[in-house]
Image 1 (cartoon, helix red, strand yellow):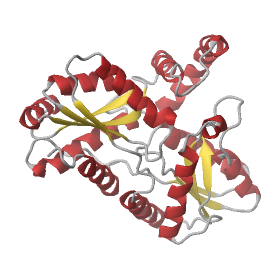
Image 2 (cartoon, rainbow, N blue to C red):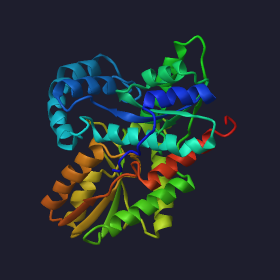
Image 3 (spheres, one colour):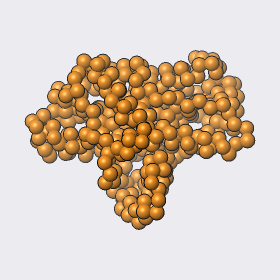
Image 4 (spheres, rainbow, N blue to C red):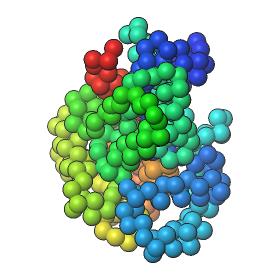
Length: 349
C-alpha cells in the first residue's frame, strides 16, 4: 500500500482549521478492526459486530446463547492468530486502519485546492476510531454540513445501512444537528469501473505468470437478505458485467464468486473457496483473484484469499495463485474517492 503523504499540520489541527473556515466535514467510513491482534480485542470487536441486527438479523435468545456461549469463547483465539499474521507491526494496527487513514489524508490534500477549507476525517463502523466519536469531533470543530462516504461500492443493509444507522444514532443525541449527506453506492459509476480495470491490468502485468482464470470475489451475505429485497447481489452482478465489458473478458474467464460464509444458512453462491478448488480439480493451474467489493485490503483479502484460498487451490492441484491488491490508497483508488466526494459536495462549496 502507498505511504500516506506528509501533511503540514497534524490531523486534529488540520480538521479544526478547515472546519472553522468552511463548516464542511467529510467522513470516510470502513467496516472495522480490532485494536490489537489478541483474543481480548478480537472478542470485543466481534461482539460489537455480531450484535448488530443489520449483520445478524435474528438477535433472539438462541442467537445470544450461541454468540456468548460458543462463538465468543472459541473464535477470537483463532481470529487473533489470523490478524497477527497480517498486522502492521510498525504502526501496531491492522492494514485496514493504515490504509483508511492514508485515504483520508490524501483526500484532504486532493480537496485542498478548492480553497474553502474542508475537514476530512475517517472512522470505523465497528472498533476504533468509532463513527460516533469522529462525527462528534467534526461537529465540535464547527462543521455544520457533513458528508459521510461509506467505502462500500455495492449497497448492502449489513454495510451501508448500518453506517447510516450509527450516524443517525449519534446525531439523535445532538440538540443542534448539522446538515447530513450520505454518498450512495458507486457500483456502476464509470470512474469506479475504470479504476478497477486499470488496477486489474496493472496487477496482472506485474505477475510472473499468465492466469487462466481471473476470479472476482465479493463478501458473501445470507440469501435471505436478497430474498427480503437487498440489492447487493444485483449490484455485484452489475459491477462484474461492466468490468468484463471494460476488460473484454467473458464470464468463464472472469467469474463472480462470494467469500466469508458464516453459519449454516444458505449464502450467496458460488462460494469462492469451492470455486477455487473446483477450478484446480478441472485442470486450471494458474489463477488470480480480485476483490472489487473491498475498498482496502483487510483480513478477508490478505489472509482469507491470499493465504487460505491459495492453500486450497494448491492442495487440489493448482500451481500459481495471486491475490491482486484492492484499490487501497493507490492513484486509481484515490480517484474514485475524490470524484465521489466532489460530486456529493456539489452546492455546498
